[in-house]
Length: 318
Length: 260
Image (tube, rainbow over all chains, first blue to last red; front, side, top):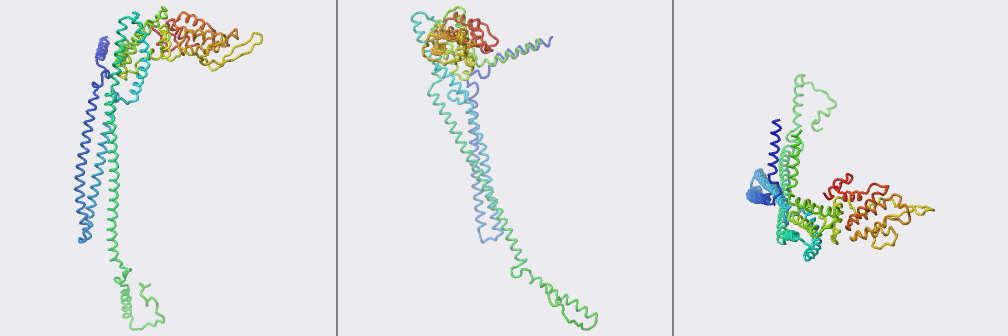
């Protein structure tokens, strides 16, 4: 019983509290913090663009240094007075610097692209925050509502013209009560003021100008984002190209070395290396064995009608 | 159990408060607007009294205020009720105002009470007493040609035209004449033609400011033995005249009736 009473009290208190709270959306836009959202987004845009600028400046400096180093190394690699190996080493270092330049630019383009995407997102957020604001509304729902009110107004003004004529006549006859007369005039004044307040040419022009500015900015950011993506792609392509060059150059050096080694092993004038190998030298070994045999069996000359071919040629000449 | 009911009530109250708070002042204006229209309709149906210019101006003042609010805050536009004076009232004669408001409310709730409803089947009647034969005709569309006496189809076409131009007295007369088929004593086979013409006549009487005649014509219409589903236009007029909701009309139409 007690718990029931307590829960009832809690519900009633919660209800009273909820009813006393201001309802979100009931107040005009300034209290909804739209201006705060816009200021925050504008700050974020400013920060991102500053970072883009700073990063670009830093990367430009680095690229300039690397290019200078690359030029020095490349010049050295072209110096014919230096030994081949040293020249190749300079060329490799030069290539490394070039690759570093590309990597630097590629990373910069990628990071800047991400920052510009954030800028574009912030601009869209501003656009959304202002979507239902006077003169800036461009969402279909608000536009439809504005059109609906305009349509109602057109018809209502016709009725008002007829009723005003009737009321004028009735007023002259004295058949119109002063209260109604006053009330109707007030309502007419209110509606006229509301129309006037929402039809300000300046307001519309200002709103349109702001929206145009946001659109132009967004389009400009998009163009730069696209450019960044293109820079990233072209740099990546150049990087891969230089990798291919480095690979082919390296391979060429290796092939040349192999070729040189081969030249030592099998020269063109003696492809089988017979000058070094001297296969005919084997003969003396054959001879050496036959001498030993003759010593063992006495000096009895052997009668050979036919000398075998094998005894007459060098087997290596077969 | 009590506790649960209380919680449910609290949730409902809270939800109502949250939903209505945005529209606050517009909702209050809409309530005033509804009350002003209710009083004009009730006074006409109950006391046969026509609205004064004061009442018309009060209704228009409500519309002006709601429009001003919606103009200043377009998000309120969707919560604005249908503006009956702006869209449905001709203001040719203040005597027409209550009827036009009733018809406008029904239209806003989804029922066009001023247009007759005929199904796709042709209308048939028996001609001749000795050599009986079945004759057919289709319902005509509106025509400004004044009908010859006894030409029920032309009467109907002209009555439709009169409704469109706001000549309700003429319309009621011609609808009544259209309901009488001179060539057939028994009328049409299904009696849909007679019913629709009488219901149209009753509505035309309502619009012209003769609610007594409207009641009489409506009771004649409802006494017919019709071979078709009941007419919603007739049911709506009957509910409006007697100030009683009808379950078959549905929530929107019942809600559009003037509260007494």
